[in-house]
Length: 60
Image 1 (cartoon, one colour):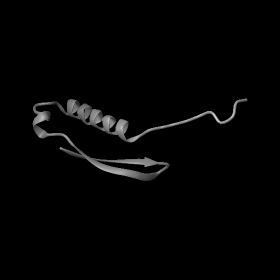
Image 2 (cartoon, rainbow, N blue to C red; image 1 turned 60 degrees about the vertical axis):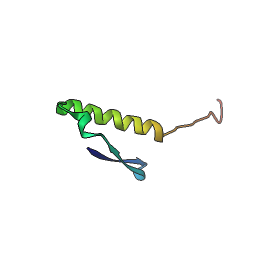
Image 3 (cartoon, one colour; image 1 turned 90 degrees about the vertical axis):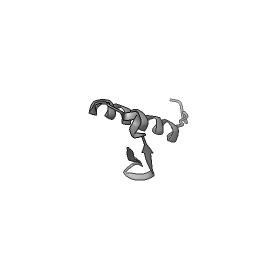
Image 4 (cartoon, rainbow, N blue to C red; image 1 turned 135 degrees about the vertical axis):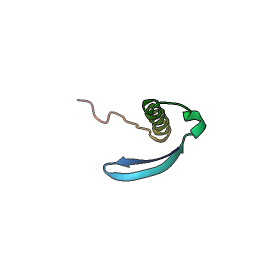
């Protein structure tokens, strides 16, 4: 199974990728279990691709 994902920031696409899940790993999963597997795969991708850094510029 191939899943195309897009990462957009402020409405602008910054990254597009295709994730794959081997069909044999899906086996006899229910639709709900397949959806959960897709969500895990996407979350893992996002964790690798996105970093947020911040710092306090001015204290009140």
